Image 1 (cartoon, helix red, strand yellow):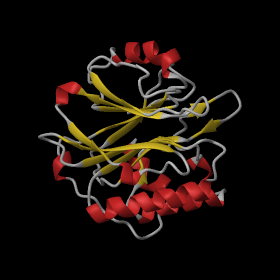
Image 2 (cartoon, rainbow, N blue to C red):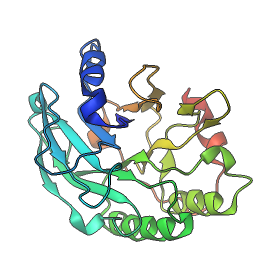
Image 3 (cartoon, helix red, strand yellow):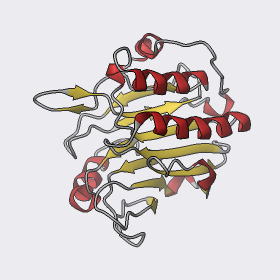
Length: 242
């Protein structure tokens, strides 16, 4: 699951309260816009181990990951996958007796950062993941509205780079909705091609972004990654998942 929290210090209680109502807790929660100032900022979610980054020079932004304790995951940091020159990111390689060396990344691209430069940094990390043939899930607030895929060249370029590396978006409907506009800027991208993955948007009032999620197949450990060379329309590719 990913959520743009718009300050964990302000919205943590609401997040914890809403999570407590779920019958199945997410194995991993990725958070953007934590607004953490130091790595010692404590934003505990019961039953989870947290990895929080901090932004020292200015307010806002910042990312974190929460890993469910009951699933006995071990993890190692993957700083070599960082996109921090164009965004804020955190990557881990996750393992337990069911999931083998899955790469989990959380990314926050500020709305004023250059989309093309960001896409080039994404392309570099995708090249590494592709060579390793590891299942990968990229979660975050990308501040790139995929609803403009056919009208905005930098957005088309971003989608093309993902698709050409075998990654596709699980979320195809708006995640931030106001009185004046609706945008699809929060997403989960993966190179795991499994029709049994169930993506969704959690309709809950925690921040002005709706959380996005993916329920993985019980056959996940047997799933294969796949490189797709041909350009595709992601909306047609994923429409049958809803």
